Image (cartoon, rainbow, N blue to C red):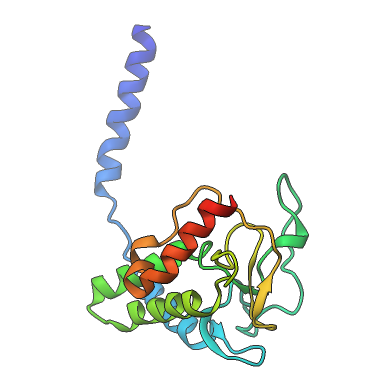
Length: 186
């Protein structure tokens, strides 16, 4: 017992000063580069209607929607048929959207927040079922950018929380319909 305690203390004490001496990296320039590239190349320029919706995936060589499903190794709960690579899915983009809000807050440049708000506002306006109120997002369904329509009809949420407060500010009635749709159809 004493020996393991001494070894643990020695490791902690030896790593402590080393960790304190390291300087954290600032990735702001990389995040800005990503955000600007995405605002320029990552929005919907497919199908009959071009929009501020964000592509779920980009081919890194062409900076456009992939023509084939990205090759992701098969594994537990990974299904080829219900990925949203050919569309948009703000439910899965929540952290990227939050990063755009945070980037505007940190830099004082409103363009990142505005891009996120255009995405969410358009999605709330055009990508909601008039029948159920459910949004075209989640684990199995998404908005297909090539067809400007819902792709898949299975609606499921998993673990992360959607951007309810941000979307409420943009279109409270649409958010209320979405929440009521979740209550009625889940």
